[in-house]
Image (cartoon, rainbow, N blue to C red):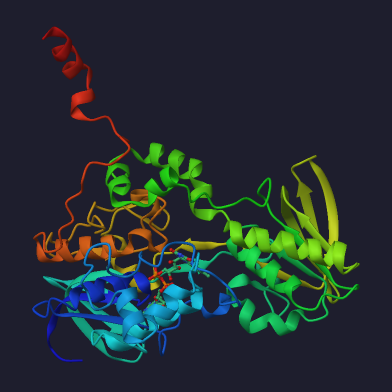
Length: 439
Ligand SMILES: Cc1cc2nc3c(=O)[nH]c(=O)nc-3n(C[C@H](O)[C@H](O)[C@H](O)COP(=O)(O)OP(=O)(O)OC[C@H]3O[C@@H](n4cnc5c(N)ncnc54)[C@H](O)[C@@H]3O)c2cc1C
């Protein structure tokens, strides 16, 4: 690497840091470079099952919400790839995830500020700059950082000892599907990933001897709520109102809003129901396909070549044991502070384990100079709201970070009044009401 001190070094190149990079591409005066440990960009390839769909609008891309004339929009991708009219003719209700992945890959292979094959191992700070050291022996210096390392697959404690070719996280299903052939399988988890894995297993040829047991802690196989007012949670206006709330209130609201972000797509649920109907009533299939909501897997034991799952049914509070030969853990993802920040952790503020204390501009509160910022993307669900881990406000957040870095409103992010009055506003306070009444 050169001796240049960058204005911004990005660690991790997923869609969220790529949004920052795409916005910065229109600002050549800002010296920025982004680094990813992978040799090349690939968007969640392990869960790219046939027919998988994006859960939100393709207009919620890397740039459009803040900079609709950027050359890095999804529309620009369609036009550049000569498929704009064909895409419209398809009248997609939802875009295939593989098309979104192709769009991201196009941006990733076009932006000159992106560098792959660089795993950040250690970050240090001295005087007025960070030094990022990479596993390949190189390093860079930068005034500010943007940490965008994504999330890590969550594995329940009871499954951790058994991780193997026959017990693995859903994020690897595409690579390990062959190991499930002819086996009796349990899927643990009833969110979107669990639905996609179950649908994939029953969409192929299903024999009478097959067994798929699908456990979900949720009381039913519940849909994502994407109705208009729920979608208000996925707007910058809501995030702006959410951020200043006390932590306890935020935790409560996140729990109330769980289905808005973690439910399954209604189209996937319908596809599962229809396929079960076809297999059961039209094909006379005798396979053991069991959908079991309200179930908490409390213990897993290995017994020879199979696993014994102890499961509590919260519908009737009974315990039962089930035997399978393979387990797919559709048990979600967790935010982790990357090990490369270990040396700085003592200087950063946290609201809990792996929960940075974040300013409104997504910079971590730390004891270093105010002009040296550590931004964090996909790490602010607890502080900015449920929209954080998905694409809805990614372009807006990316532009917020760029404005903060520049110290001016380069992108016009001034917010109009929200359609819903979430917070108590000045005019609503008792003093104002009393004054109004006295007039
Ligand atoms: C299967 C799946 C489907 C999804 N579908 C949708 C959807 O339909 N709609 C939606 O809005 N959201 C969706 N999401 C959620 C979210 O949009 C994606 O997870 C998105 O990829 C998050 O982007 P990211 O930039 O935070 O992280 P990631 O995409 O995970 O990228 C992080 C990058 O950081 C790199 N990295 C990690 N550590 C280091 C290091 N030390 N040094 C260098 N590089 C490092 C990794 O190699 C990785 O490339 C989905 C998520 C999953 C898992």
